[in-house]
Amino acid sequence: MSGNQYKGHEVSCCIKYFIFGFNILFWLLGMALVGIGLWAWSEKGVLSNISSITDLGGLDPVWLFMVVGGVMFILGFAGCIGALRENTFLLKFFSVFLGIIFFLELTTGVLAFVFKDWIKDQLNLFINNNIRAYRDDIDLQNLIDFTQEYWECCGAFGADDWNLNIYFNCTDGNPSREKCGVPFSCCTKDPADSEQKDYINVKGCVPQFEKWLQDNLTLVAGIFIGVALLQIFGICLAQNLVSDIEAVRASWVPPPLSMRRLPPHCSKKASAYYS
Image 1 (cartoon, one colour):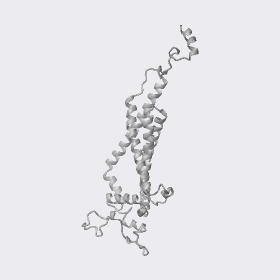
Image 2 (cartoon, one colour):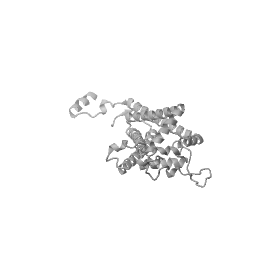
Image 3 (cartoon, one colour):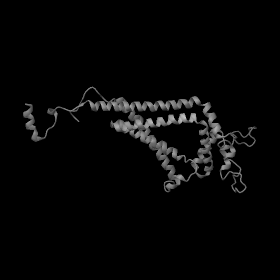
Image 4 (cartoon, one colour):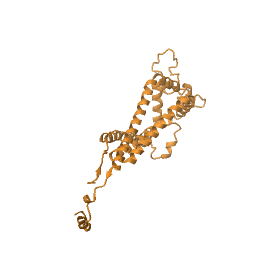
Protein backbone atom coordinates (compact mmCIF):
# COMPACT_ATOMS: atom_id res chain seq x y z
CA MET A 1 0.00 0.00 0.00
CA SER A 2 1.71 3.19 -1.15
CA GLY A 3 0.97 6.09 1.10
CA ASN A 4 0.70 4.09 4.34
CA GLN A 5 2.59 5.82 7.12
CA TYR A 6 4.06 4.25 10.28
CA LYS A 7 5.30 6.18 13.28
CA GLY A 8 8.06 4.84 15.51
CA HIS A 9 7.46 1.06 15.20
CA GLU A 10 9.03 -1.58 12.94
CA VAL A 11 8.88 -5.35 12.71
CA SER A 12 12.26 -6.85 13.64
CA CYS A 13 13.64 -8.54 10.53
CA CYS A 14 16.11 -10.55 12.65
CA ILE A 15 13.36 -12.11 14.76
CA LYS A 16 11.06 -12.56 11.78
CA TYR A 17 13.53 -14.45 9.59
CA PHE A 18 15.08 -16.36 12.50
CA ILE A 19 11.65 -17.78 13.35
CA PHE A 20 11.01 -18.44 9.67
CA GLY A 21 14.33 -20.23 9.09
CA PHE A 22 14.18 -22.27 12.28
CA ASN A 23 10.61 -23.43 11.71
CA ILE A 24 11.02 -24.27 8.05
CA LEU A 25 13.54 -26.91 9.14
CA PHE A 26 10.98 -28.34 11.58
CA TRP A 27 8.33 -28.21 8.89
CA LEU A 28 10.44 -30.13 6.38
CA LEU A 29 11.60 -32.64 8.99
CA GLY A 30 8.01 -33.17 10.10
CA MET A 31 6.94 -33.85 6.53
CA ALA A 32 9.82 -36.31 6.15
CA LEU A 33 8.83 -38.22 9.31
CA VAL A 34 5.17 -38.38 8.27
CA GLY A 35 6.27 -39.54 4.81
CA ILE A 36 8.42 -42.30 6.33
CA GLY A 37 5.50 -43.38 8.51
CA LEU A 38 3.09 -43.52 5.58
CA TRP A 39 5.65 -45.45 3.52
CA ALA A 40 6.12 -47.97 6.36
CA TRP A 41 2.37 -48.45 6.70
CA SER A 42 2.09 -48.84 2.93
CA GLU A 43 4.77 -51.56 2.96
CA LYS A 44 2.90 -53.40 5.73
CA GLY A 45 -0.45 -53.06 3.93
CA VAL A 46 -1.97 -50.90 6.65
CA LEU A 47 -3.12 -48.19 4.25
CA SER A 48 -5.17 -50.73 2.29
CA ASN A 49 -6.78 -51.97 5.52
CA ILE A 50 -7.05 -49.10 8.01
CA SER A 51 -8.67 -51.30 10.66
CA SER A 52 -5.39 -53.25 10.99
CA ILE A 53 -3.85 -50.24 12.77
CA THR A 54 -5.60 -51.31 15.99
CA ASP A 55 -5.07 -55.07 15.49
CA LEU A 56 -1.54 -55.09 16.90
CA GLY A 57 -1.55 -55.90 20.61
CA GLY A 58 1.63 -53.91 21.25
CA LEU A 59 3.05 -50.62 20.07
CA ASP A 60 3.45 -50.02 16.36
CA PRO A 61 6.70 -47.97 16.15
CA VAL A 62 5.33 -46.23 13.05
CA TRP A 63 3.02 -44.30 15.38
CA LEU A 64 6.11 -42.59 16.82
CA PHE A 65 7.00 -41.25 13.38
CA MET A 66 3.43 -40.18 12.68
CA VAL A 67 2.81 -38.41 16.00
CA VAL A 68 6.20 -36.72 16.27
CA GLY A 69 6.20 -35.83 12.57
CA GLY A 70 2.64 -34.49 12.75
CA VAL A 71 3.40 -32.25 15.73
CA MET A 72 6.58 -30.95 14.10
CA PHE A 73 4.72 -30.34 10.83
CA ILE A 74 1.96 -28.33 12.53
CA LEU A 75 4.36 -26.29 14.65
CA GLY A 76 6.73 -25.70 11.75
CA PHE A 77 3.91 -24.63 9.43
CA ALA A 78 2.41 -22.20 11.95
CA GLY A 79 5.76 -20.66 12.88
CA CYS A 80 7.13 -20.52 9.34
CA ILE A 81 4.08 -19.09 7.56
CA GLY A 82 3.12 -16.94 10.55
CA ALA A 83 6.52 -15.25 10.60
CA LEU A 84 6.83 -14.89 6.82
CA ARG A 85 3.33 -13.46 6.32
CA GLU A 86 3.30 -11.62 9.67
CA ASN A 87 0.13 -13.49 10.55
CA THR A 88 -0.56 -12.92 14.24
CA PHE A 89 -3.14 -15.73 14.40
CA LEU A 90 -0.63 -18.37 13.28
CA LEU A 91 2.07 -16.93 15.54
CA LYS A 92 -0.25 -17.00 18.56
CA PHE A 93 -1.28 -20.55 17.66
CA PHE A 94 2.41 -21.46 17.48
CA SER A 95 3.06 -19.96 20.92
CA VAL A 96 0.03 -21.58 22.57
CA PHE A 97 0.71 -25.00 20.99
CA LEU A 98 4.36 -24.87 22.04
CA GLY A 99 3.29 -23.77 25.53
CA ILE A 100 0.88 -26.70 25.83
CA ILE A 101 3.64 -29.14 24.84
CA PHE A 102 5.97 -27.58 27.41
CA PHE A 103 3.29 -27.82 30.12
CA LEU A 104 2.61 -31.49 29.26
CA GLU A 105 6.33 -32.29 29.40
CA LEU A 106 6.67 -30.56 32.77
CA THR A 107 3.57 -32.30 34.15
CA THR A 108 4.79 -35.70 32.92
CA GLY A 109 8.17 -35.17 34.57
CA VAL A 110 6.63 -34.20 37.91
CA LEU A 111 4.15 -37.10 37.86
CA ALA A 112 6.89 -39.55 36.90
CA PHE A 113 8.91 -38.42 39.92
CA VAL A 114 5.97 -38.48 42.34
CA PHE A 115 4.40 -41.76 41.16
CA LYS A 116 7.57 -43.73 40.42
CA ASP A 117 6.13 -47.08 41.49
CA TRP A 118 2.99 -46.63 39.38
CA ILE A 119 5.11 -45.62 36.39
CA LYS A 120 7.25 -48.74 36.89
CA ASP A 121 4.14 -50.94 36.92
CA GLN A 122 2.81 -49.28 33.78
CA LEU A 123 6.17 -49.71 32.06
CA ASN A 124 6.17 -53.39 33.04
CA LEU A 125 2.65 -53.81 31.63
CA PHE A 126 3.62 -51.95 28.45
CA ILE A 127 6.70 -54.12 27.84
CA ASN A 128 4.79 -57.35 28.49
CA ASN A 129 2.08 -56.34 26.02
CA ASN A 130 4.77 -55.79 23.42
CA ILE A 131 6.40 -59.12 24.27
CA ARG A 132 3.09 -60.83 23.46
CA ALA A 133 3.01 -59.10 20.05
CA TYR A 134 6.72 -59.65 19.32
CA ARG A 135 6.22 -61.75 16.18
CA ASP A 136 3.16 -59.83 14.96
CA ASP A 137 5.01 -56.82 13.55
CA ILE A 138 8.55 -56.63 12.15
CA ASP A 139 9.02 -53.01 13.25
CA LEU A 140 8.04 -53.87 16.84
CA GLN A 141 10.35 -56.87 16.74
CA ASN A 142 13.29 -54.74 15.62
CA LEU A 143 12.54 -52.16 18.34
CA ILE A 144 12.46 -54.80 21.09
CA ASP A 145 15.65 -56.42 19.79
CA PHE A 146 17.43 -53.07 19.72
CA THR A 147 16.28 -52.28 23.28
CA GLN A 148 17.39 -55.64 24.67
CA GLU A 149 20.75 -55.48 22.90
CA TYR A 150 21.43 -51.86 23.90
CA TRP A 151 20.60 -52.31 27.59
CA GLU A 152 21.76 -55.96 27.68
CA CYS A 153 18.46 -57.06 29.18
CA CYS A 154 15.77 -59.65 28.59
CA GLY A 155 12.06 -59.15 29.21
CA ALA A 156 10.56 -56.58 31.56
CA PHE A 157 12.02 -57.98 34.79
CA GLY A 158 13.71 -61.14 33.52
CA ALA A 159 13.88 -63.78 30.80
CA ASP A 160 10.84 -65.60 32.23
CA ASP A 161 8.64 -62.79 30.88
CA TRP A 162 9.02 -64.36 27.43
CA ASN A 163 6.69 -67.13 28.56
CA LEU A 164 3.96 -64.62 27.74
CA ASN A 165 4.71 -65.01 24.03
CA ILE A 166 2.97 -67.92 22.29
CA TYR A 167 6.14 -68.85 20.39
CA PHE A 168 8.50 -68.89 23.39
CA ASN A 169 6.33 -70.15 26.27
CA CYS A 170 7.04 -73.48 27.91
CA THR A 171 3.55 -74.99 27.86
CA ASP A 172 3.34 -78.65 26.87
CA GLY A 173 1.09 -77.95 23.93
CA ASN A 174 3.38 -75.37 22.33
CA PRO A 175 4.49 -76.77 18.92
CA SER A 176 6.93 -73.91 18.21
CA ARG A 177 10.62 -74.67 17.67
CA GLU A 178 11.34 -71.64 19.88
CA LYS A 179 9.55 -73.25 22.84
CA CYS A 180 11.15 -72.35 26.22
CA GLY A 181 13.55 -70.00 24.41
CA VAL A 182 14.12 -66.28 24.10
CA PRO A 183 14.99 -63.99 21.16
CA PHE A 184 18.61 -63.79 20.04
CA SER A 185 18.72 -60.22 21.36
CA CYS A 186 18.62 -61.68 24.88
CA CYS A 187 21.94 -63.46 24.38
CA THR A 188 25.03 -62.10 26.08
CA LYS A 189 27.66 -60.36 23.97
CA ASP A 190 30.34 -62.54 25.54
CA PRO A 191 29.25 -66.23 25.58
CA ALA A 192 32.43 -67.13 27.45
CA ASP A 193 31.18 -65.30 30.55
CA SER A 194 31.36 -67.97 33.24
CA GLU A 195 28.69 -66.30 35.37
CA GLN A 196 26.03 -66.78 32.70
CA LYS A 197 25.93 -70.49 32.09
CA ASP A 198 22.95 -70.19 29.76
CA TYR A 199 24.48 -67.25 27.87
CA ILE A 200 21.35 -65.15 28.42
CA ASN A 201 21.05 -61.69 29.96
CA VAL A 202 19.22 -62.36 33.20
CA LYS A 203 18.48 -58.71 34.05
CA GLY A 204 15.16 -57.21 33.01
CA CYS A 205 14.85 -54.10 30.86
CA VAL A 206 13.01 -52.06 33.52
CA PRO A 207 15.86 -52.33 36.11
CA GLN A 208 18.43 -51.76 33.37
CA PHE A 209 16.58 -48.66 32.21
CA GLU A 210 16.52 -47.33 35.79
CA LYS A 211 20.27 -48.00 36.09
CA TRP A 212 20.91 -46.24 32.78
CA LEU A 213 18.95 -43.19 33.99
CA GLN A 214 20.95 -43.04 37.20
CA ASP A 215 24.26 -43.38 35.35
CA ASN A 216 23.30 -40.71 32.80
CA LEU A 217 21.25 -38.42 35.01
CA THR A 218 23.31 -35.34 34.16
CA LEU A 219 23.01 -35.96 30.42
CA VAL A 220 19.25 -36.63 30.59
CA ALA A 221 18.65 -33.56 32.78
CA GLY A 222 20.78 -31.43 30.44
CA ILE A 223 18.76 -32.57 27.41
CA PHE A 224 15.43 -31.84 29.10
CA ILE A 225 16.59 -28.43 30.32
CA GLY A 226 17.95 -27.61 26.86
CA VAL A 227 14.68 -28.59 25.16
CA ALA A 228 12.68 -26.60 27.73
CA LEU A 229 14.82 -23.49 27.24
CA LEU A 230 14.51 -23.84 23.46
CA GLN A 231 10.72 -24.01 23.75
CA ILE A 232 10.59 -20.99 26.08
CA PHE A 233 12.90 -19.10 23.71
CA GLY A 234 10.62 -19.91 20.77
CA ILE A 235 7.54 -18.75 22.66
CA CYS A 236 9.24 -15.47 23.66
CA LEU A 237 10.41 -14.77 20.10
CA ALA A 238 6.96 -15.45 18.67
CA GLN A 239 5.28 -13.21 21.24
CA ASN A 240 7.85 -10.50 20.59
CA LEU A 241 7.13 -10.66 16.87
CA VAL A 242 3.37 -10.53 17.54
CA SER A 243 3.87 -7.43 19.69
CA ASP A 244 5.92 -5.76 16.92
CA ILE A 245 3.28 -6.54 14.29
CA GLU A 246 0.43 -5.28 16.46
CA ALA A 247 2.38 -2.14 17.38
CA VAL A 248 3.03 -1.37 13.70
CA ARG A 249 -0.63 -1.90 12.86
CA ALA A 250 -1.72 0.30 15.76
CA SER A 251 0.61 3.11 14.67
CA TRP A 252 -0.53 3.06 11.06
CA VAL A 253 -1.78 6.46 9.96
CA PRO A 254 -3.93 6.64 6.83
CA PRO A 255 -2.64 9.05 4.17
CA PRO A 256 -4.26 12.49 3.92
CA LEU A 257 -7.10 12.93 1.48
CA SER A 258 -4.89 14.90 -0.91
CA MET A 259 -2.67 11.82 -1.42
CA ARG A 260 -5.48 9.41 -2.15
CA ARG A 261 -6.60 8.42 -5.60
CA LEU A 262 -10.08 9.78 -6.21
CA PRO A 263 -12.65 8.64 -8.74
CA PRO A 264 -12.80 10.85 -11.88
CA HIS A 265 -16.14 12.41 -10.96
CA CYS A 266 -14.71 13.52 -7.59
CA SER A 267 -11.41 14.88 -8.86
CA LYS A 268 -12.76 18.32 -9.87
CA LYS A 269 -14.55 18.79 -6.54
CA ALA A 270 -11.46 17.68 -4.62
CA SER A 271 -9.26 20.09 -6.62
CA ALA A 272 -11.63 22.95 -5.88
CA TYR A 273 -11.70 22.00 -2.22
CA TYR A 274 -7.92 21.95 -1.82
CA SER A 275 -7.30 25.07 -3.95
